[in-house]
Length: 305
Image 1 (tube, rainbow, N blue to C red):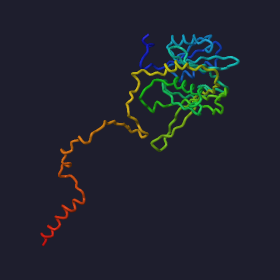
Image 2 (image 1 turned 90 degrees about the vertical axis):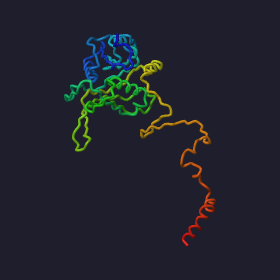
Image 3 (image 1 turned 30 degrees about the horizontal axis):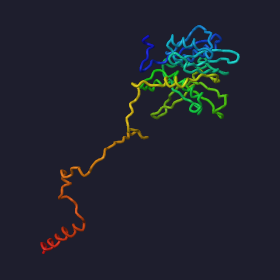
Image 4 (image 1 turned 45 degrees about the vertical axis):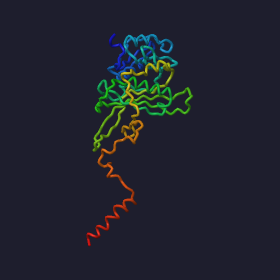
């Protein structure tokens, strides 16, 4: 029970892969490949389950609570929606959101590429190609889901040697935002290769390692506004303290405003400063010429004579 208690910094999100009663061999292999990118924070059920997530998600919520998993992938296959994967997220072990994506023709798995391996547990880099990921609500949800799914441990440590593969999601442009027909989502995985370039910065190339999927987007469930607000709320202990009147400009310099109360300059002590004593007070130019400069000049002439 201690593992499931609320914490200021939550554990790494676990993913559960569940096969439906109508799943086939291809969907099983596809989930194995997606799970390989998520390891070691992933589990898989070996038995098939008779579940219809969009009609009744209570069984998935039970699996989520029992296995302490907030991410889930469910496979199903039928004539109307062939080779379908349903991606779900959970908050407090209740369905937060859900999206259905069907694998289109010509997919490729790990085994279809050259055998390229990388250590388990590395965090991937992401690229999102297409303006829809910043403007269209469906693709914004997909972007949020995949970043949440493969986020891994949150850490401030940075190691260039750990940046070995990229998950690339691409989609075409959406001409009509109100159209129900959405472009395909292209899922690709690449491994980084560095070569000597004769300079300090090496030459970097990417090599596709799989899996490769083209998803057709189907049904989806979005979170309720109040649930979304609760899920995105940060504990007060983790919220950054806001300093009043302190900002940072575009150069990264700190800029602050200082508020000073009203000052009565007539009460300022000035006589204690040597340069402000009465004998150093300035006089008018006319008075200076007549009294000082005009009297000293004849005396100097007499002395010369």
